[in-house]
Amino acid sequence: MERTFLMIKPDGVQRNLVGEIIQRLETKGFTLVGLKLMSVSRELAEQHYAVHKDKGFFAGLIEFITSGPVVAMVWEGEGIIASARKIIGATNPLSAEPGTIRGDFGVTVGRNLIHGSDGSDTAKEEIKLWFKDEELVSWQPTINPWIYE
Ligand code: DAT
Ligand code: MG
Image 1: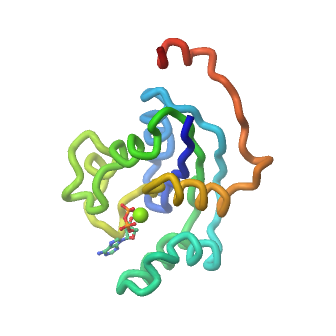
Image 2: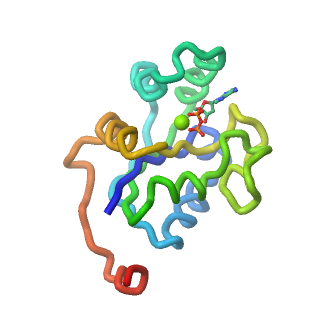
């Protein structure tokens, strides 16, 4: 089973999309193993987006991510890293397919609602950066035999 880090950004929280977004992952069949509403410090935001620190949009991105509460989550499931990226959709919401979170709810790249880890190494790093071990709960949904053969 794979785990990934997903974060509903301040725009997703302000626009009351927390329930909608969680529901899409739940009904897909994935398992929530960590969840918290939190303010993001500048330090955490800069660490999380360190790979983009030389980009022109970095300062605005850090301002945005620290501008209001986010919902940080860890989700588990077979193939979840790539699947969650598909459920989220392309970085630019105008290019994101209808049916994806960004395609259905977003318009501009600087307000694209949700973050998802882009590979197994970044997923591990981001889970460690955002969550303590004791904040994650390993559990077996009783519905799983109806989702996995
Ligand atoms: P993703 O979030 O799809 O993994 P990314 O890692 O390339 O995309 O960029 C991280 C975030 O930075 C992205 O969700 C929104 C912001 N961003 C990316 N490109 C941008 C741009 N050209 N202008 C403004 N913000 C941008
Ligand atoms: Mg990325």
